[in-house]
Image 1 (cartoon, rainbow, N blue to C red):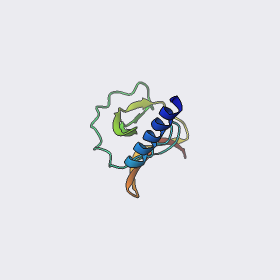
Image 2 (image 1 turned 90 degrees about the vertical axis):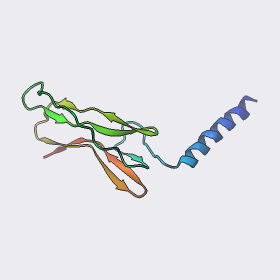
Image 3 (image 1 turned 30 degrees about the horizontal axis):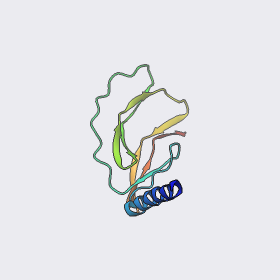
Image 4 (image 1 turned 60 degrees about the vertical axis):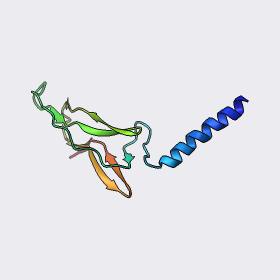
Length: 107
């Protein structure tokens, strides 16, 4: 009886994923998320004083979390000599939107 219940639960989960076919979101640590709808407009943030000279403000951004967008506020980041910051961004791809998380680039 438990085996049948487990099979039904798995089949239901797979059916829900197949029917939604809207979002492919990789596990944490991967560099991209894909959503079926455009992200909301960027929120206005008040940027205070840097905690130390040279600190960089990393703007907040919308992140796809499971089945919806969630705003993550900006924060101050210590500088990395020899690197520059590339901000978070969303790009249309196919029938969805792909996120490129912010990252440091050498140069």
